[in-house]
Amino acid sequence: MALREHGLPYDEDLVAEGLPREEGSGYVAMRKLLERHIPSAVFAANDKTAAEAIRAIKEQGLRVPEDIAVVGFDDGSLAPHTEPPLTTMRVFREKMGALAARRLLELIEEPDQPPVQIKLSTHLIVRGSCGAKRLTERR
Image 1 (cartoon, rainbow, N blue to C red):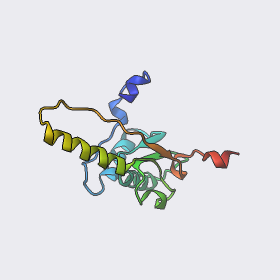
Image 2: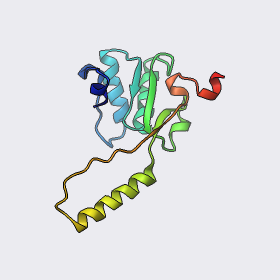
Image 3: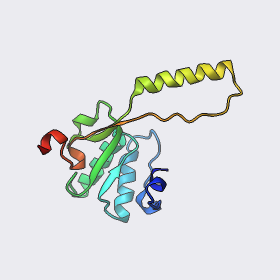
């Protein structure tokens, strides 16, 4: 949806999928991607996958962020401890949980309700893996 909203085509060659929840899937997916070409940036499904991608990138003799920028998703406890520290999208888990619980209660009371789409905001946490300087560092 985001690509379409910005008039960008979907390119299968720029996507590498690992097996969800399988140890090392980010590493394997990054290796597959690097076999096809060297991207300028990678956006991973979560921070663990991003950390595994960083390992694969470094094993190929490439540098993060100088050769490939990496961004994760979830801002878990791992993100500030990767090398370089991982730029990531922070999700608001408590709000997500509260909305999910509310929706579950609604469905218990009225099971025939149609599906709904709930969108939550995220927040970009800029660290070293993307190559961008934080606003405070730019001044």
